[in-house]
Image (cartoon, rainbow, N blue to C red):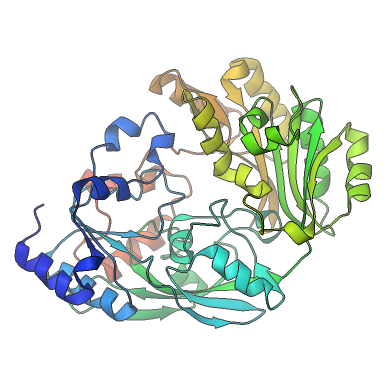
Length: 450
């Protein structure tokens, strides 16, 4: 659609001229998320962009912008920092991007919880929490840039999920204040876990998050380790010995098949990535001798360590090579790679990996993150794949499902084609809170086909 000058003037009067972005190059740049990780999505979404970016500086301005857009039936794409989405954050119908990045107030902070506005950077929360003896329960690998609201709307888990699970797990998200998209927007305070199912990982489809409360954990003296193994199999068995030890404090248990470690420039520079070796990346409270003793039965050797005094204080952290940052490093080194999101059966993971490797060989490189979901530990995959064609990629995903690997397809921007799609709660919330269907249109295939 084309935005009318009267409408743009109205927004300018609300937020001020400096908080409107109209330059075409900036619009194109800021309309992107990480869809380009997928060679399937890239040609489909490369030309999509918003017509205007609006950056309210307060919740009051946010509400006024929403009211103006609803009255004119202008599509709205809410945006945190767009750090972890793969197509769901792309404006498919033009309209405006409503950035919440300037809502940066920490409303309340205690050792038990942080209540913040949507634009507060997660690293800021972590720093402030650690000053009072607490820490985030978990965060994405984009800790330095991800906003709290963006993580709640578009994320799921991350560093810390090996202990605390995901955003959906009870007790991790304690409350949220959302703005409905109506001519007279409502500010709704939600704490009921069932109602929050319409907010968590909604990818901008149901509401605009203004304020949220995240549960915190007691701060720990985390040490970071890289441990090298002769084979991915032995590294994985070591990882299992840590992940399934319920008495062991842990924040990160990552396993990487060679040559993935060769993509990590800083670690290669520090001689942490021996040629041909699989790696474990760890955040633990154990001292070096204890880690070495635990790794020895699996043939593991510590190649790098960072003490608690350096945790989250240096230019880079070990978690910068985990979760989907692994994919980013890989693509920088080899643009022919893409990735999968797969979850293995804890009882069959070794068999499933063997069957897949026998069929696809070096076309697939294993990357596993251990995480809890609904109280159960899972080996979660972010496997790297040599892209040959969309058909080959689909065949690979079909094969994975045939041997019991649970797949979340990162090569579609349609939310209802993702197995994590929270279906009815999202649709119900969208009907109640966005009656005109203005939020992030074009990302539900079921609505596109009507």
